[in-house]
Amino acid sequence: MKLFDVYPRYDVEMVKAEGVFLWDSNNHKYLDLYGGHGVISIGHTHPVYVDRLKSQLGKMAFYSNSVNIPVQESFAEELTKFSGYADYKVFLCNSGAEANENALKLASFYTGKRRVIAFKGSFHGRTSATLAVTDNPKLSSALNRSTFPVDFLELNRTDQLRQAFEKEDICAVIVEGIQGVGGLDAPSPAFLKQLSETCQQKGVLLILDEIQSGYGRTGKFFAHQYAGIQPDIITMAKGMGNGFPMAGLLIHPKIKPWHGMLGTTFGGNPLACTAGLAVLKVLRQDAVLKNVLEVNKFLMNKLKEINQIKQIKGKGLMLGVEFDFPIREIRQTLLFKHKIFTGSSADPNLLRILPPLTISKKQIALFPAALKQILS
Ligand SMILES: Cc1ncc(COP(=O)(O)O)c(C=O)c1O
Picture (cartoon, rainbow, N blue to C red):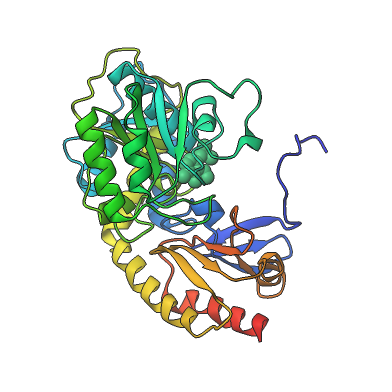
């Protein structure tokens, strides 16, 4: 094998995709309840997305941030309007880790401080600063460890919050809207409110990592909007480009930029912004966020009929179906027998569901039906 072998892979090869379905090299059709790790927001090969990308590709694939890029301006305009953050600024980059790395750096620039509060079970990426705030020491090399002080607190423990904020050198708190890799635990609205208030009182920046939970996945544009708070920095990636690599930060206007403060060669390139604009257009024109809520309700009712399910975590179409036994075998049977692709997490008993947000009730109904068959 010529590839650096870091991924455990299923022995299937996907060669074609449309909407919520994938086809493998043997022409078997699969229902995609994984969305390539929560990336596919408006469905595979959506015609608006394909047409716009083809047209942009024919005009110009790339030029760097040394010139004006009108499609970047249009994208930022649309994003801030649609997400409810009209007065925030946008910085575009290429991956979730890069977005969080830049968010942490911005918080340190702004406050002149370097301690970060993060949470147990967190995953924020695999670059140096993001690994330091990720609660999984196995992923860190000697080089990544102890880059700056980090305090890991438990989610929803306001008592720990009070104590942690007694330190004077904190620049940021970073928290996921809903923990993805960790297993679908989430900060409660009350906890987020308290966190936001404490950050404001102490001059600490609140960074909401919405890389997985954002872009409509929970039925609101961002998961934290259920708590009615406004973080200082919001990071996003996955659903943003529907498969075209792109990521970004929404930045509170009190944080002022200077030339050279942040930068990237590829971030905000014309193809990425074209993909991003197509995603926003479809989310809006097809009332996709409303669909997320309706499909969620339908699925929750169906899943309630299955006694072996211990609980369902998450919101909208970012769900964790928890059993009191490991899901490994169920996941394999779903994939190989029922041709339904699902996800896993750090919790071995949790099946992770991250379908395209455009999925219909009829399509998602295949999942509880298959589960019932497997568990009977
Ligand atoms: C919440 C969260 N933050 C950050 C990341 C890192 O994103 P990327 O893999 O694009 O660097 C992920 C990826 O799974 C994530 O789920």
